[in-house]
Length: 150
Image 1 (spheres, rainbow, N blue to C red):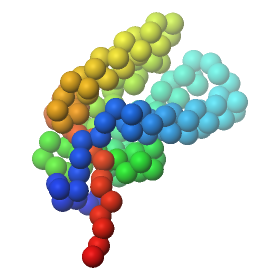
Image 2 (tube, rainbow, N blue to C red; image 1 turned 90 degrees about the vertical axis):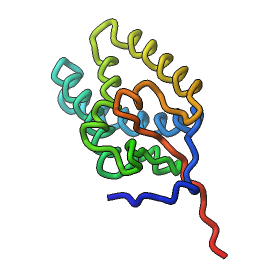
Image 3 (cartoon, rainbow, N blue to C red; image 1 turned 30 degrees about the vertical axis):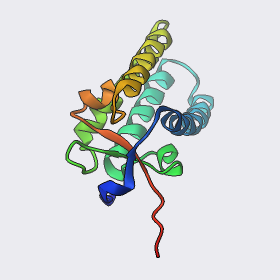
Image 4 (cartoon, rainbow, N blue to C red; image 1 turned 180 degrees about the horizontal axis):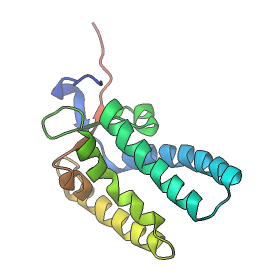
């Protein structure tokens, strides 16, 4: 279980670094899901399996590790409202919006609208909480500062 850092060493994560972390995660998942699709075919079962893999990856990584691979790489961590790692339920509620993109035909357009809504909400929040963070009970994404020892 991840350690809870000193609040002084945490700063709210801004949009560019959060998008960069998500980009790393999307790249990794695209490779895995592409290989999976080559193995089983790119049909409806692949779509269901790929969507399940994506939601499990984000939900379990945030809940049990405090970060995904992309967040780890950029020193980001997800915390629940009490300053602990988010619960599995909070993490699932926080990431549930990503399933919208798996809806056939209109999913990508709906996902784009939801992403815009989330980005605007992060931008307007002084502590950089998006609507998905608020729906999850108040989760936060923070960037850990490098600690310098004397």
